[in-house]
Length: 334
Length: 284
Image (cartoon, rainbow over all chains, first blue to last red; front, side, top):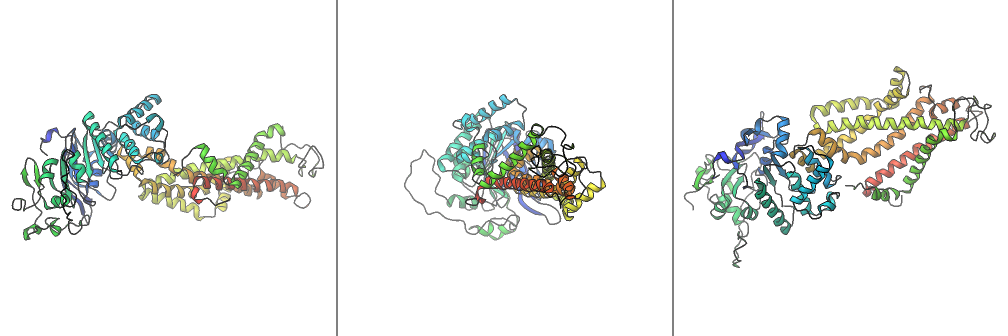
C-alpha cells in the first residue's frame, strides 16, 4: 500500500495456496498485501475468490490437502511460513487472532460463555481464579456486552446474534493480538447490529492500534470502515489502493462491475438525492477454484476483453498514489 | 444442544416414568449394598444355620440358607457390592480407554485412525464372551483380570461412538475458532470436543455397567469367576448344584441380576431421552 514496507505489522508476499504434488492446483495465485498497525485493509471478493483461504493461511490453519505452496508471510520480524508448532500456537491468538462469520456455530454449545472466554485467556496466560474472572469481565466490558456479570454463566444459544459476536470478538482479543482477521464478521447479523459491532471494532482498533484485515463481500462496509481495499478475483488481487481512491475511481472492470451491481455508495453525511439507478449485474460466474482461465481470469466476463487479454496474465498498472489494477486496458478506457 | 442444568435435566428425565422406576431400582441396590454391614454384620460366608432352610422357615433367615447353611440374605447383600463394583469399574475403564482412543482416532484421522480402528475391529471380530473366557483362562481369575477382560471386549464400541462424534465436531466452527486462539490439540480435545461427546457417552456407559454385571455373572456361573469373591454370579454357581431341591438359592441372585440389569438399562434409556428430547416417545 502507500506507506513504507518497514512499518507494516503483517506482510504477505506472493502467496500461492493450493494442492501440491503430482497434479498441482492453485487456488490463491500470488497474493501480496501489507497491514499497518491501527489500519483496516478490506479484502473484497465474491465467494470462491480465495479470500477466506487467505485468512486461514495467515494463521497456518489451511485444511489439508491445501497448503501454502509459495510466498512468505511476515509478522513483525517473524516469518510465519517457517514457524514450528509451538511458535505457531503462540502466534495464533497472541499475534494474529480471527473472528468468524457465524457466531453461533463458532461458540461451543455446551459451555457457558464465561468459561469459553476463560479458556481463551488461559491459552496465553496463567492466571489465578479471581484474576481470570476479572480478565473475562474486563474483556466483556471491552466489547460492551450489556450485563456482563449476569451473562457470564449463560450458554451461547441464550444470547442474541450481536451479543454472540461480541463474545467472539472478546475471545479473539483475549490473547492481546496485534492483528485481527475478521472474516465476514457481520454477515450473519441485522443491519443495525452490524453497525454497532463495526463501530465497536473501530474503537477497539483505535484503542489498541490493532491492524484489521476485514474480509467482506460488502462494498458498503468497506467504504465506511476500511482504509485500504484489495479486490480479489479468482485467487488474485486485481485491484488495490486506498478505500477512497478505489471506490471513487475504480479502474478494473471487475471492481466497476461490483460497484455497479449494488446501490450507489453514499456517505452518511451526504443526503439522498433521490436519483435511482438501474443496477447492472456482472454476466457469467466466478471460475471454479483452481480453474481460472489463462491470461486475465476475468476476461470471459469482461465487456472490454480484447485478444491480448487472453494471452498473458495482466501486469499491475499503477494508476496513482498506490492505487494499482491488473488490467492491460486501464489506460485506454477511463 | 442440551443445556446441562440440573433442574431442567431432571424435568426431562422424570418425564420417562420407567426411567424413574429404573433409578429407584438402582438406588435400592446401591443402598442395600452400602447398608449390608449394618443389616447383616459379619462374614456372609460363615455357616450360621442348617443347610436347605427354605425362605420363611426360620425367621432368622428371611431368604433361607444355602446348601452349606450360610445366610442367603447376607450373601445377597454383600454379593451385590461385588457385582456392582465390577459393572461400574468395567464401564469406567471401557469409557476411559475407548473414549481416549476414539478422541485421538477421530481427531487426527489418517494413519492414527486406521491403526486404532483396525485394533478395535480385531477385538470386535471375536465374540465378546468367548474372548473374556480366553483372557480369564490365561490369567488367574481375580477382580482385576476379570474386569480387564471385560474392558478389553467393551472398549471398541465406545471408541467407535466417540470417534464418530469427534469427527463431526472437529470440523465445527468452534473447534476451528479455538485453533485460531492458539489452543493446543489436547486442550481442544478435552475442553471442547469431549464435553460435546458426553451425552451419548454417559448413556453407553450406563448400559455397559449392566452388561459388565451380566458378563461377570455368566463367568462365575460357568465356574470361571473369582473363587474367593462373593457375587451374585458365584451364588448362582453354588445354587446350581441344588437346582432341584433348593431352586430358591439360584432364584434370588438370578432375579436380582435381572432386575438390576433392567433397572440400569431403564436409567440408560431415560438418560438418552433426557439428552435427546426430540427422540423422546410420548407418554413413556
